[in-house]
Image (tube, rainbow, N blue to C red; front, side):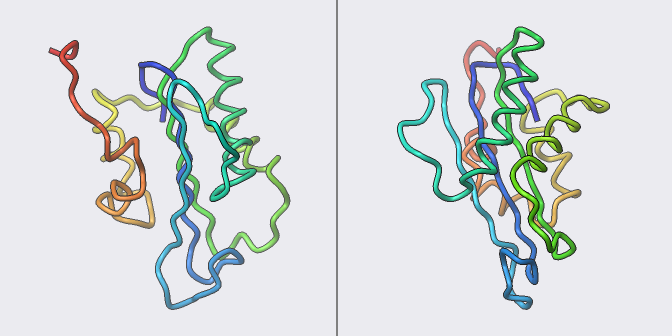
Length: 144
C-alpha cells in the first residue's frame, strides 16, 4: 500500500501455522514487523531482517522512478505451501511485480487497510495491534 505523505515504511509478515517459519501446526499466524519513519533507522532490522530490506528496496525504486515519496506498507503472507525458501530476491521481485500491477484506490490509508483485511489470514484488529502504520492512522489538521 502506498499513500501520499512523507516517507515512512513498514513490512508486516504473516507466517502460517505449519510453515517452515512457524512449525506449530495448531498455533496461530506468527506476525513479524519492522518499520522506519522519515528519518530512517539507527539499527539493523532483526525481526524481519532481509525481507525488510528487499521489500524496502523495491518500494524505493518504484518511488524514485516516479519522483515521489510516500507512506508504504508491505504485507507479506508466507503460507505452509511455501516450503523451500529461495532467498530475499523472491520478496524483492514480488514487491516489484505488485507495484507494477493494476492499482486499486481508496479514499484514505485506513480505508485501504480495511479493504485488504478480508484478504489476509489475520483479523484487521490483529493487524492493527502489530502494525505501527495501521494502528497509527490519525487525522491531521491539514486533512480538514
